[in-house]
Image (cartoon, rainbow, N blue to C red):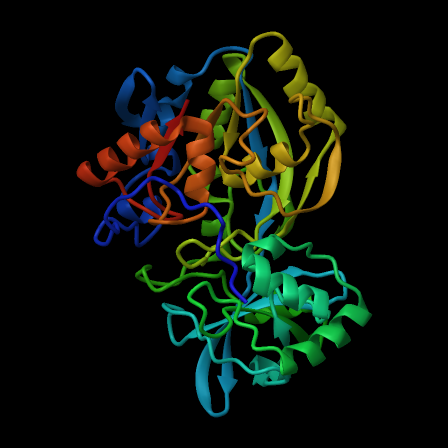
Length: 396
């Protein structure tokens, strides 16, 4: 079954091929906070550099930052004698993992012809078994009829928590139901997988895995290149990259100006969504302290600026309909869109997203569709750089 969003973003632009950051800014002769920053507001668009971010903020503004740290999750596998790249992501409630198969050697494209029960050999005796497509169609006849009558969007996003009974049932169902979780309707991009390792998974990944990366990069970089300065809690399959341009010096200057930092944690899944694909459920936590900081600032007229789509998703998942934030944790399947716009966030610091990416719905919810379109047109015209090591935008 498909994971297509029911609503598609209205922002359209040419694919930014040739505008990709192929390596960290430090290897391009820049400081971490030396990437370009576009400031997009209803008053117009301005171009600056990230270390001048303080010029755009005021005392009492709150920056919501993600403290999740990136863990290595890319492995080389052997699939029936052929090389394949394996991506290991979120741990689910039954102990299985969300996994993805991609083409070797650089993970440039998804592999969509995986089979239920297939086993992939991993380094040092590790084995991955594909259990069922993810997200998967529940086996009940009611569910099948609803999919046929209402369309796939009636089922998504699905909760990520599953039980052992769910796992067994869905593995059987996957054999019986023509389930295609890729948005193009052919094959399955993501799987629920069972990993059998010669040691604990965390130690195994530390020894044998590398950071998840894709074919647009010009090399492999150490895990330190994929950490933000806020990284405290290991758990993200991929870097919460909007926070990467922050340096210790920049944070110190912002604090001295009265800008408030409010931490949340959201462990990211795989960012390789196809065009129009819904984001997957992710685990998050918003503390009582952060809720108080955000609510107090809003009561005083301060602005709440989320550093990234992950911070937006987390803080909005903890927001009541009246905009009051409460302490919360667990799995969130929230999709920010015109149907469920932001309630708390006034501004957004973000990188640049691919055409038709679901994250564009979130950006449009914060900034408005017209401003988002103007910003992306300007980014293409001014040769801003895309992806995790690229340039940034501040939307108000």
